[in-house]
Length: 259
Image 1: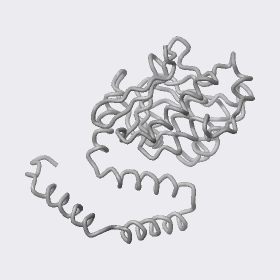
Image 2 (image 1 turned 120 degrees about the vertical axis):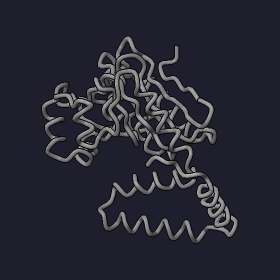
Image 3 (image 1 turned 90 degrees about the horizontal axis):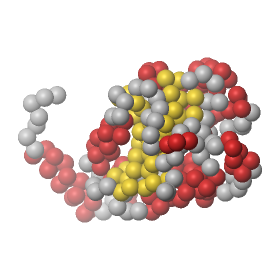
């Protein structure tokens, strides 16, 4: 049985699933390597436009399998090729996390590496680094404070208390909270909405948002301007014609009576 499963659906959606439900999808070193490989392969696969990331059973990911902690934490952790979070950050295509149950510590960090998050109502995000004497290395100590604010992030990380799905949504960390068993369905709806758009621009917009978040606002605005100039300077007459045809085709459709 593959502990990391990849299923490609028709229409451009790929689903990566952590499949170790009896252990609440806790991660071994081998699973981390396989997970990194899966994201790298999805980046290279031209048939895939959006990746949905989820966990089998009642948990998204309960963190590292601490029975194999030494092999994980003293393994080849500096190798970006086997680091799932680095490979997620390198993935050009949008990643939608469908979170059921627990996303604990390393699982929390994997959730933070997604671009959009859907959580079931009973989902809980929990940082237990401080509880077990583990130093964060997949970005939680830096990313969470930038998303939910420093004071709330300090409380979450220093107390190891859970962040519920409803609170996470209010804080802007989770995009949608849905009923139990509905997270994957909602994630697919969002993926389908993304796929309807011009895919080259989807990749560019994801990139400029994520790259800009690493900068202060002034430099991020400069980054956007530079990339816009480079994009328009490189456009051919044929590309402008296709843009006009796309807009005309959209405009010719009968508008919906509902707003």
